[in-house]
Length: 113
Image (cartoon, rainbow, N blue to C red; front, side, top):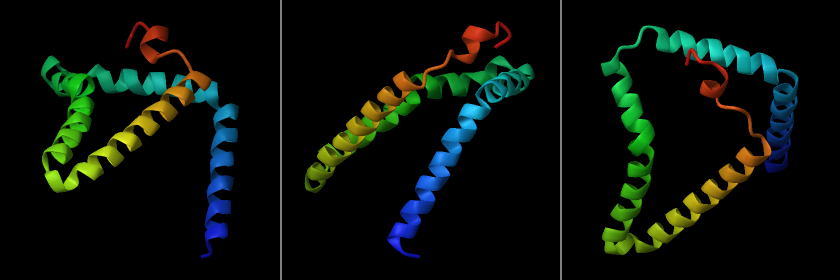
């Protein structure tokens, strides 16, 4: 498959996802509230603990751990710079998209969560 065909398919799928998200935004949000409540219904304190640990320090531990690892390995210091650039770009893009398409968090809307 040619590169232009792949790009065209990717753009068409992305446009379809954006259109469907606009059409089903409220229904999907309400379904996600029900899904979250069902997931949390039978959980104990000990089953919630690993998720809270991962949510609070897991992601940043992995991110900064890889940066530290690449920096320590002398031959891979250039990779550390590229990794920092990639992470900075991803975080900036994520922040911009979150500002554009913000919605209330599920726990703001439903007291059951």
